[in-house]
Length: 173
Length: 173
Image (cartoon, rainbow over all chains, first blue to last red; front, top):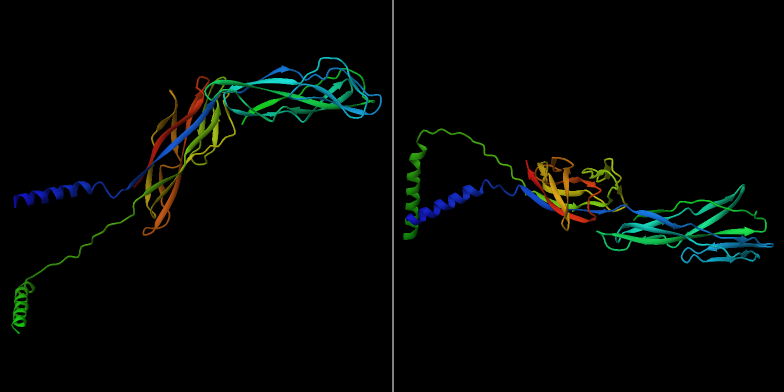
């Protein structure tokens, strides 16, 4: 008899305590926050684009090309232009930045080299459209690429020293 | 036959016992009991908080902000940090529960995102401090809200992938 009264009393106590806990009036969710921090990207030009000396054709036309990957110079077309022995080379660049990150390379499609009032339009080509910086996230890395180009030359092209500039840009993807 | 007689006697006894109660003077009052029963509140996370990739400043300091309402990512401050094209989002939540009920939204003031031994402290913001479930009492309703945040970034911030978690809670008002 005494025992059952105690049991009853404790059951009532439980009821009193659990009632204020209220019927699940809150709900929670865990959420993830994330972000990636990387160091600034840098671009250094190692060499300029040099087509060297070209002898214009006496007949027909040619295209003079510097390969973006190898830097090799070549002549195509049916004209009789000639490549004189001279220093030539592709433009080369070194990219610095966060390891393992990818970047896009952009150059203008064309640029002009001029000599006084005369002009040559050079079509540009890069060794790749994108690159990946060496190493892993958390450390600095590097990457390299090249830019070549081509221009047409005919027997009407004025002789002269032609120069021009273009801008190459790299952007993190 | 004997059994029927006994039952009849018992009925008579009951009637005899209840009659005197009716004879007493009584006073009555109608009393209203009320309660509102609502269904449990639920919280579902739709998207996590993602700051994407941020290029740390070469000079100065910046803050990276994700808007709690629009999810838009912006950069403030005088530093040279940059935002790269990457997937970003505010944290988004869906609340379920009783129609037309209001609830409060709580998040910690800050939480840490870590990358190894390095840490970023994110200050959290919510699109609203409270919300109201759609529909009317008696039907299920829903509501949505968002959580954004910001963290400072300096030239000394260490590169890496940072992650952390925080808990969001909704409570019926």
